[in-house]
Structure formats: C-alpha cells, structure tokens
Image (cartoon, rainbow, N blue to C red):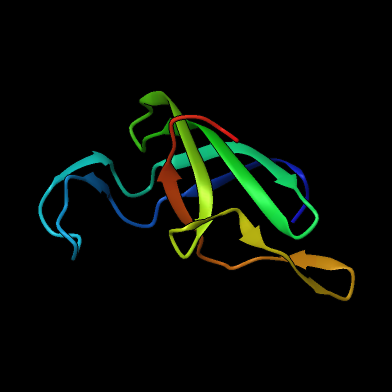
Length: 100
C-alpha cells in the first residue's frame, strides 16, 4: 500500500435507511460499484478520502466518503511488516459531511 490514488470495489449493495441488522432500506450504490480517491499517511494511521463512485453500468457520482475502522475511528491502523505497510483487508466506508 502506498500514498496516493486508490480504488476499491463494493462487495455488497450500499443501502440507506436500514435497521440495526442491515435489513430494509433502499440500495443507492449496487455491489460492484468502484469507489476511488486518495490515501494519505499519518504517523499511525492511513486515511482514505473517497471522492468518486462509478456503478457497474457506468453511472458516475461525486461522493464524500472516508475509510473507517470499526465504524468509529477515522482511518486505518498501520501495521508495519518488514518495511511494508499493511492495514485491515476489509475497512468500513462511511459518508461524511466534509474531510478533516
């Protein structure tokens, strides 16, 4: 992993207005949507700012999302392994009002 542009693909539908168990609601981004943005390295965390979503059928949207860990902490813990930077393989992605 390195600082700069990155993209991830949604493994499941992104739904809003779901209950506490993820049921109900409506899909706003289907699985397979590609999210792209920038990775920025801090002293102990990697921050991911996502600015674009492209659906599998090509619809493109400007978004304001960030990578989170455990749905509460902005960014991801850095784990160093022989000079390589590693983070959790499945971060949470959440919408935000603005980047901090």
